[in-house]
Length: 113
Image (cartoon, rainbow, N blue to C red; front, side, top):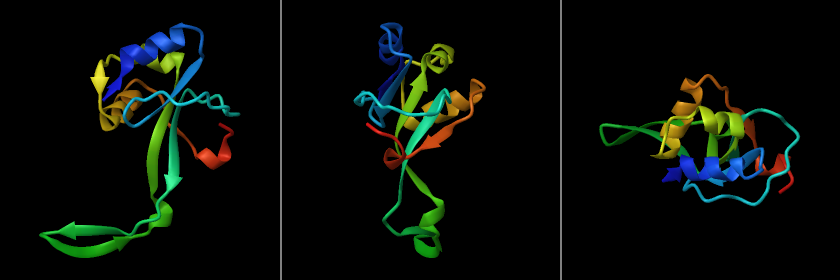
């Protein structure tokens, strides 16, 4: 579970943003060139992705058009706007959008960590 109040405390202690994985584990400082307040850290999929309906494989999806979310980078402004305690990655994504922020996307290879 992602602990939003604990992440909020980190940014109140001086950081302008915080990076964390899907479990809420804070990642090492991430140097990025964008100023977007909410970022999804994504990577390319390497596994086949199938559509299953009624217990049968119905279709394949183009994995080049799908990302795997590895983590998040949120600014102080975004964390302050969230009315969440412990949350799941899915709930976090929805809450950030509902708070009026748009998600940007960054891949680990496009930033220096």
